[in-house]
Amino acid sequence: MVNHKVSLIILNFNGWKDTIECLESIYQINYPNYDVILVDNASSDNSIDKIKQYCKGKLKVESSFFEYDKENKPIDFLEITKEESESISKLDLSNKRLILIKNKDNYGFAEGNNIGIRFALKYLKSDYVLLLNNDTVVDKNFLKEMINVTDDKIGIVGSKIYFYDSPKLIQSAGVKINWYLGEVDEIGRRKKKKFNKIKEVESVSGCSMLINKEIFNEIGLIDNSYYLYYEDTDFCIRALKKGFKVVFTPYSKIWHKTSVTSRKTTGLREFYSFRNLFLFMNRYSSKIQFFSFFLYFFCFKLWFNSVIIIIYHKELSAFTPFLKGIYNGIKLISLKEKVDEEKIIM
Image 1 (cartoon, helix red, strand yellow):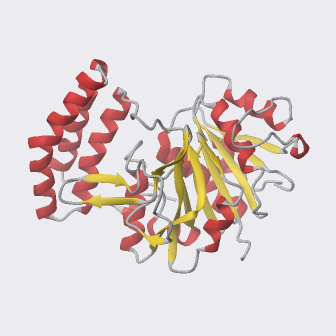
Image 2 (cartoon, one colour):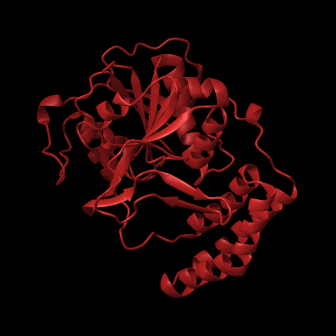
């Protein structure tokens, strides 16, 4: 195994309890050549102070997935603002195991990660960047196993993701896309067995995504026009179109805090999920595929999701954002919005 330099990027927004559990699992992995960039998206829950207390060894982490290790504390960290991360000409990063970048605003998932990616490529000279959700816990071998499958043709590697509250139940073993229906589904969801082979897929979850630095030279960063949802799938499709492979490996394991029985419904989720679905399909599907998707959506999916939101979840406050997201997505495609890779600036 070649010990490529890897920068793990974690985005935090009002989630310090999840974040320090994630960090503690990371600092117990068996891969030697990595650093961690933690980008805080203007949290208002005292996240920065809590994370610094954890780094100093003053805040113990309780988890059913590992035992807290007091011997690896304190964790040396560098605390800087977003503006400093983009303007400082030279930084002394020796012995710094955590880079903490503080944003004054919430830039969403896409641009929040881009801030970390830019820092990793500029200052850390990383061979790979790994996007990792803050509400995850990682297996000790997870990064080593991802690196084991990399080569010059493989641009993106994804982990096998399990449910945190049902540790043997799969959440995602890669992503498949039904272009005629506009369904972007996680492979193996709620399954316990199978999906134990390394395989090429159309996309992997941004929950744990290892990216070769050469991809950024070819296609730029994550498209921040999505803000939330579909930006990871968009990134994988752009990589595929440039000739890179996207690969799922079952030997890299993480656990994600997503409910097995339901997905939380909020106005923010519904707006961006459906706005971005239209944006994504318009960009990458053929005319026939998009026409099929359009019919399917308005003949079935619109009504099905309305029932789910109003009757099943009983979230009336999310219904208007749901409709606004559809309207906004149609408005974007009526303006013939297309991918412009030159605008996805490094």
